[in-house]
Length: 114
Length: 112
Image (cartoon, rainbow over all chains, first blue to last red; front, top):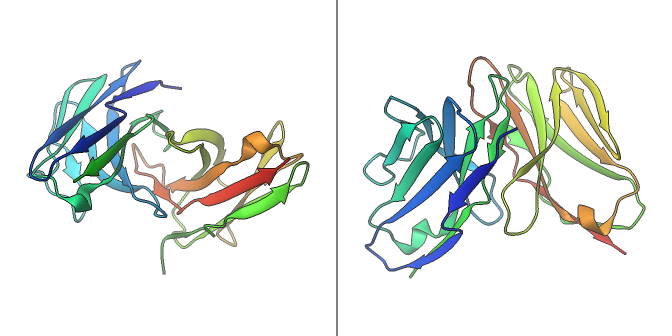
């Protein structure tokens, strides 16, 4: 298994600003993932981050709004840009546990945009 | 039709009860099936993992997969108040580093 550390754990931000969320894994992994979890909803995949290449975004999510970095095999960041109240949500990162579909999750970042 | 259907609950049971949580799915290519437990204000924690059809038991937890019916279940025996959480089913085609598809999660409340 992998241990995922994510920070900040929560933040309150003003409309129009940006927030960068960091995700650290305790072992080297090929794939990392970023999700959004809204109340009463399932986890929605934002993008998949493979080290050394551009992130792959899911339908409805764009790089200008959610730029992702993946500088090495243990670290990734997600930036939520030009925030609006609709971006208030929990953002989760995860890391793959092998090519069997298992993913291990961080504790999440609870974001509120005023 | 959503790809994975899961009753959101809440499901309220007394301590000691047997709990049954279920998901149905439509994608016949799913081969890997997982149950995650998520406590309030925490990230999802992998609870059970099953490949293809069959049963898997781990302590008080049993996961069942019926691919012919596209139906998976998680049973919790002798439920405890500490089992109170949201349980998310998740599935993957598993071909290479494939993505997970989640259900909405079922909130379970176990009262002492």
